Amino acid sequence: MRIGLVVAPWFPVPPTGYGGTEVVVDTLARGFAGAGHDVVLAAAADSTCPVPLLPGTDAADPAALGATGSELSHVVRAYAGLAGVDLIHDHTLAGPLYRHRPPGVPVVTTLHSPLTPHLQDICRAAAPDTALVAISRDQISRTPGLRVAAVIPHGMDLSAVPVGQGRGGYACFLGRMCPDKGVAEAIVIARAAGIPLKIAAKMRQPDELRYFHDVVEPMLGPDVEFLGEVGGQEKYELLGSATALLNPLQWPEPFGLVMIEAMATGTPVVATSRGAAPEIVDVGTTGYLAQTAEDLVPLLVDAAALDRPAVRAAAERRFSIERMVDDHLALYARLLRTRRGP
Image (cartoon, rainbow, N blue to C red):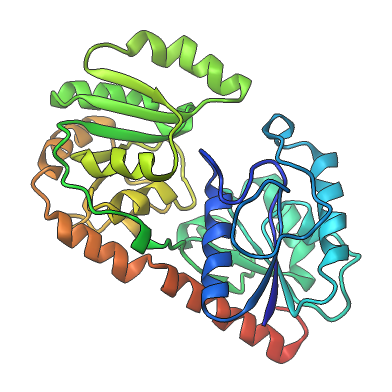
């Protein structure tokens, strides 16, 4: 197949720091190319993913994150440049609503965000001629009647991730600096468990900065260290040396890529049982789940005794790049057989 991938223009692919969707698209692009398919990527011009990049795109501008005009302009150029592909997989919000598509080319879109009422309206408007892919069963459980073509959990290239020993003597929080991710709760839990905590978080937007300065920064101390934003091998070293990833989610996160990244390093996950967490964490094998932050305190202590090779093996079995790529290619083949879309 000749596959066109479209992602919003605000961060490069792969991202230099935080960027969940960009990590997923980079993984897919590499996986499709490794399986022998031709891939064209419509992304920020400073992307370094080793597949052909559609010319004429702008360099990434995180300051424009969420700007409708930037995304629409990018989508228009992307679809014009992908006229020769067999199928387009669009990871933007605006793209599935764009109607000047190459004739006869099926379009797939992945639902990366929680299905808020606004996003449900967009999905229903796009659904007649766009195949919707959910990333967890929980994501679509609250939206009766929304038809999806497939539920495909994320995967990752585990060959590039070293297995850590977990001997750093700390728990780790990795994510975004916001209340939904449970940063403040992670500090309270770690302190109650008597385990030092290292926090690595994206903190660029005004609301993220306010949350840090108003809530998190006053809670820092000798036992709680804020590292800033980390990526690449530094991220895997941080995760691999931790006794556990502490992920006290305060919202129904539709997947949670950081959980499988931790598992890839052999580090168990201790999380609140929200969103897709029960679909990712095998309780007693790859981590522990609880309903409240208070219940996570003893579980954070217990997580250090879990078998790290078993955690890694579960990640290889359930969240590999090969499984994710095969699931997507099976969907693409089905759509191409009909040439009618979903």
